Amino acid sequence: MKHFEVPSGYRSNLINAIKQKRKEEDKLKKDFSPTLIDLGIVKFYLARHFGFCYGVENAIDIAYKTIEENKGKRIYLLSEMIHNPQVNEDLLKKGVQFLQDTNGMEIIPLSNLTKEDIVIIPAFGTTLELEATINKIGIEIQKYNTTCPFVEKVWNRGDQIAKKGFTIIIHGKPNHEETRATFSHAANKTPTLIVNDMGEAIVLGKFIIGELPISQFSVYFKNRYNEGFDPAIHFEKMGVINQTTQLATDTQAISDYLKSIIISKYGKENSSNHFADTRDTLCYATNDNQSAVIGLLEQAADLAIVMGGKNSSNSSHLVELCEKKLPTYFIDDANKIIDSNQLISNNWKTKQSDLINNYLPNKAPVTILMTSGASCPDMVVELVIRKIVSFYSLDEKLEEVINSWVS
Image (cartoon, rainbow, N blue to C red; front, side):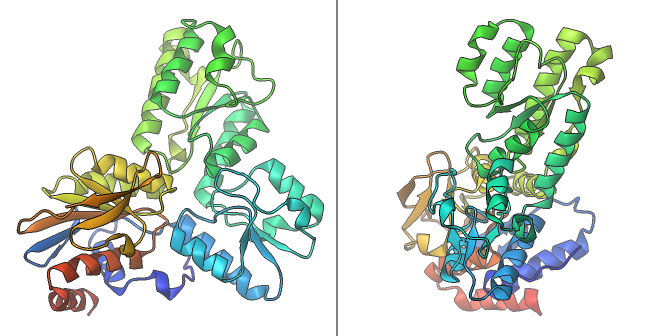
């Protein structure tokens, strides 16, 4: 696999050593059991897979090289490159400016750009419309494109089924940068609709089989489909593609449900003519991280800590999985752990921050499950471990463990 240059400040010798050893012991990635760091009165179980994925490392590598190679020029990102505060703050410190916020709202007018400026496409990709606008200014936007290869894989699969006359259903958060980009690419080729969750998929199924009147379609799915979309005819052939950071099980469930609707309408023997198999669009990192959390949750524990940006979709889904079983705290930095009694946790649904008291139980040993999202630096994980260890005066014992892993 390609090697990327990632700033050393994002790396952790401890986490790197653990990941490398697990990789050597499990080359086929079939073992999803966690890694134990046992310090006696506090124990940490680390998920088998977590942290930077291929697409994130690729984006960071391109962005930092772009900055280095274009000193003196104005450098812009269409929006946050990834949903991680440390990385985005570092880019801002290096003089990079964001043109839009995560919702696509303008921060800097595009009219301010000149053909001498550098514009970087974030890892989520961008819409064809915005890309065309930048190109008209005379900026070679594709030259600095950090779009995740697995997002592009989704676009390519969408192109393939569009050419066969299939309507595309996108399982994604409607306002997410990646979903907006995927919608733009798909809608350029074929009728396209976004569904957010299984509830909306069920409503869609009722329109397809006639349980709900077509006249109500525009009410339920306002602003979710492209111009010219006709629900009376455009569901005869369809396929599901996804925002790559969604819960893989949710995407599969939606796809299976809509396929069952197609089978009920056209018969099982004809289903392949009406429903496209698109399981190959699920991101490997999303799958691995979510499967690793499922393995992590098999351990008895007192609490879980998930590290990642509050706007990170893949991190949010890891929180969603963990909190079904035990108290779970979602943080983006070790500084959010105030002391042994209080921490500031993000709500993955509302994105609001909450002050939590008594998050560490008054017992021994305390067992903590830990994982992080695909855009979270490994150093954040190490710093969180160190912060908690300091409350138990186990710093020296942790150093012994680190030396045993790193040596």
